[in-house]
Picture 1: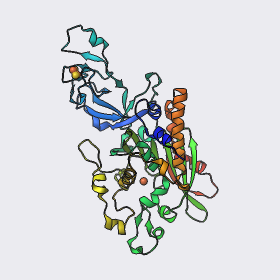
Picture 2 (picture 1 turned 30 degrees about the vertical axis):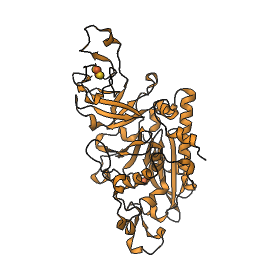
Picture 3 (picture 1 turned 120 degrees about the vertical axis):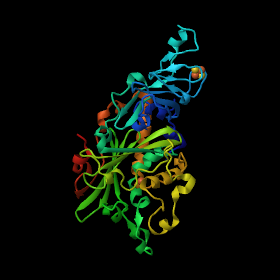
Picture 4 (picture 1 turned 180 degrees about the vertical axis):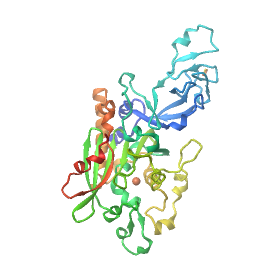
Length: 425
Ligand code: FES
Ligand SMILES: [Fe+2]
């Protein structure tokens, strides 16, 4: 049973919480590179791990991430002037560089000691793999690089990244990303010609290239803890002597990689970046290690959702319009009546409340990966508290794994049989 205390420990990410402290030992992706493209451009409001911050790119292209509020009398630096290598508070003109050092105080006497003594909270930021990452932990323990996930290390043309706002705790998103048994249900299409048949016989695979998903909607799961997090094999019957394996990766602390639809095809993954306890950024990545993406691969099945272009990244369909649910489509063609795989996921996850009450669940055999995920995260918080560090954050090369889908003969271990797909050189 998952206790109320465990749920708090899993979900609370603010400063001073066990999980929040553990997460602060990692580089964390929080903006698309395009959101801060312009030197001396508009600063960007950021909320990350429950902290209110302001991000900007200075005259020389350097990135900064500072406390949102001026240390003088607490003006919101969103209104600041981004000029000559610093962000200037509009009220009395205190100006800070990307390292958080005060560099000008025009309303103070010249040579004021205060100028040399004043700092604003600042965090290191880098641009890497099409996204912008922050490190909010102990400077002495800063990892050499963000995790070396394949999507972040391929050339730009091999990668497509979007983000959307989800009004849930990060853990709810991760749990959807590793929960292979929902794929053939939540995302399935129904055959209208078979309207009078039982549900199982009406399902059509959501992915036309993968007939096995609908042929066997009750896969058997194999969960293996790994140094990067966990590898999950979902085994479905394919033919008399083969199984169809979908291999999903969970990478600490909040990344998932879902299986490609065809062997060697584009891979998709997510970062469920915690904004605060009740919101996360869903970064969605599609990539191919070997070649540039085709237009079709950039968005297969609308996993990347359409969002408002006002900077909020709020999906166009959302809770306020019931995710555009169309009951006629639901009656005839799909489980949900909601368009797009990404928004089908968000709809069910948000419908649980922003932090689901895990004490009231009834978990089944198909939830083995979810159960393991929770244990791994709680162990991460334990490791962080006990040792003052977490090993996986300091080892970016442990992340050189990918998901895969593959047909294997009966009797072959899925990790051995799929090694040439799941290991990134
Ligand atoms: S409040 Fe920012 S300089 Fe005075
Ligand atoms: Fe899903």
